[in-house]
Image 1 (cartoon, one colour):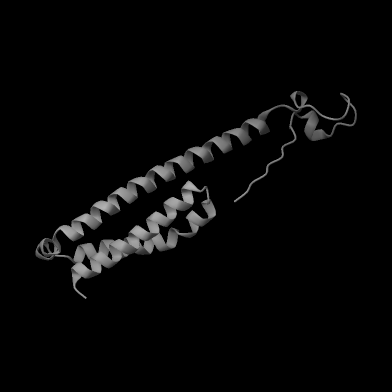
Image 2: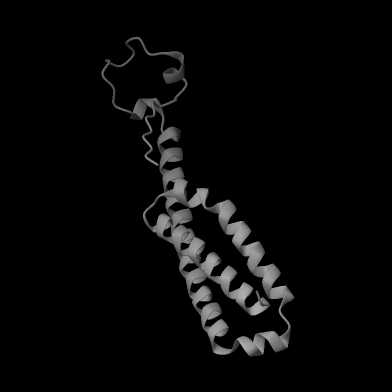
Amino acid sequence: MSVAEELERVTLALSAVIVAETRALKARDLVGAAALGPAKTAALDAFVAARARMTPEEAAAGGGHLAHLVDRLREEVEANRAALEEGLALQARVIETIAGAAAEPALATPGYRPPGAGRGKAERLGAAPLAVSVTA
């Protein structure tokens, strides 16, 4: 297999992993996106290695086809970056919400008992009850 053919093969493999990760991120499937990490790293390593082996003459011989594949890869990487940023922003909002709820004093939290009736030590110290539900 020529270096140009190898670069084409690894570029397509890297593109496939990036597209799959982007799709998972947009679907908020963070577990699925994270599971693609090792495959993404391996595909990126293979791409970098193949590109490093390619001489300028081989790159010129690959012509427009390789340039088109790399341009498409750049677009997919940009979409992946945007999906990652959206996921991180969502995660930050969730953490802020949880931290805000945990920081509220128990006295401001409505309960089922009358004031002063059987409150535990945590409630007297201002720790509000907190319930968290997570779906992955």
